[in-house]
Amino acid sequence: MRVDDLRDILSLQVLTEGIPLDAEVRGGYVSDLLSDVMANAKEGDIWITLQTHLNIVAVATMKGIAGIIIVNGRRPDEETLKKASEEGIPILSTKETAFVVAGKLYKALNVKEI
Image 1 (cartoon, rainbow, N blue to C red):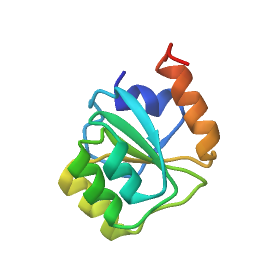
Image 2 (tube, one colour):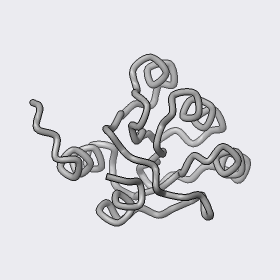
Image 3 (cartoon, helix red, strand yellow):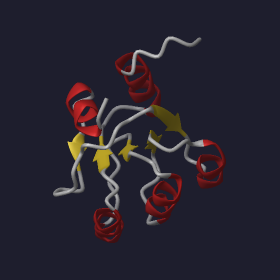
Image 4 (cartoon, rainbow, N blue to C red):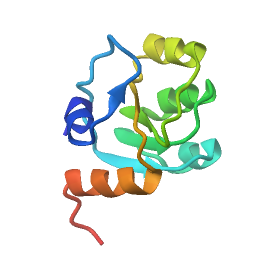
């Protein structure tokens, strides 16, 4: 599944216009702790967080994250969005909670492990 598929399925708002949304999403990771994401997220994951500061872009770039979904209607500042655009990291937003988004993502990816 690609980021643009998730945008449609989860009704996400794209905050970084002009970035291709064709990255393959292999899984998901939910965390607001950057050190946790650095230690445990995998390349190709979509990251669900409420963090909006500039460092989320650095972590996503370092880990090869397919995109960032920011929850609870939060929005990063323009500096963060500019850096994400430069790095090719799509940032998407939703008013939903991390719990709801994670559940929908799990269902959309049709994960069979429990």
